Amino acid sequence: MNSESWLRIYGELAASCVHLFRDNGVEIRLLEEAPSEATPGNAVVAFIGFTGDHLRGSLTLVAPVTLIKRSHPLREQRALDEDMVCDWASELANQLLGRVKNRLRPLGLVIVLSTPSAAIGEHLRAREEQGEGFRRLLFDAGADRLAVLFDAVAPDTALQLEEVSPSEPQREGEVLLF
Image: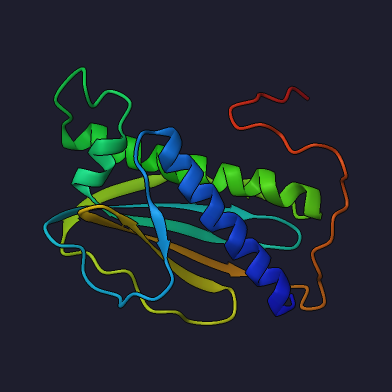
């Protein structure tokens, strides 16, 4: 895959992440340049894999527990325990990759998502970039930072993303029945 195609995927990922968190009550903004550092205190890591004919890999979120709680839909109704935080972090990873999937479909990239998973730890650090299909995006969320790791392989190195479906993109939350 050429570098312009990778940049397009990373742009779709960044936009999807900003919109996902905004839809859940948290404003975040992409940091262009930021050093990789450990997330202080308790943090959540959520990850989900994907596969397809032209692209396969994984997406990982690393965030402070406080950020996940701030975006949780039940944050104002009840106290959130660790299981609820992990479940929500898994759902955020699932929704984020689902949004990216919807944005890539008109470009001819069809991916299938795996089941997400999450864990809580202390002082988690997002790894550094490795390879053409790897990107670490850092977002500012006020007092918190969110790291999104996208690690993918495109077996077809000649693949170029082009609009193949001029139809309107699927709206977030819309259900398709086949």
